[in-house]
Image (cartoon, rainbow, N blue to C red; front, side, top):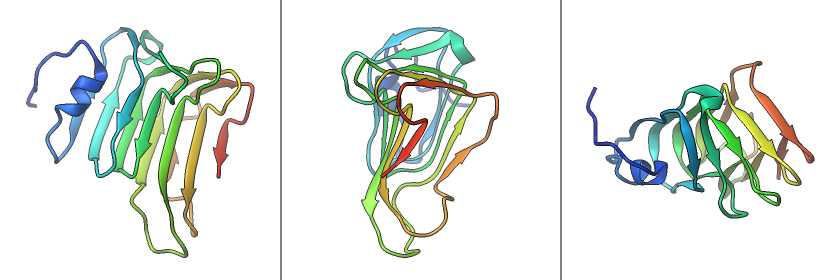
Length: 153
C-alpha cells in the first residue's frame, strides 16, 4: 500500500488522488466539510470507522456529491446533512435506453445518514435500463430523514 500523505480535510485527500484512483481511510473524528467527487473520477474508495468517522455538512450542498464517476465506494461513514441538505447526491447525465452511463458502479455500504428535509440519498440521473449503477450492500446501514430514503429523479 502506498500513502500519499496525511490530510486534515477529506476533500484535500480526494483532490490529491492519482487519475487511477485510490483509497482514503477516514480516521475517527468529526470532519466539517462538503465533499465532491468530480466528473471523470474512478476507482475511489472512502472508508471510515463507522459512526466514529463523522462527516458534517457546512453548507446546504450535499455532504457527498458524486458526479459522473465510476467504481466509487463509500463505506463505514456517518454522514450528517444540513437542515436543507442531502446526505449523498449521485449525479449523472440523461441517457436513453441501455447506453451505459458515466455514473456507474457506485457502492454504499455500512453508512449512517441523517437528513432533515431532503433525501438521505438522492440520484439525479436519467438512465433507462437496470439499476446496476448503484449497490447498497448492507442491511445494517441506518438512515434517518424526513423525506425519502432514496429519491431517483
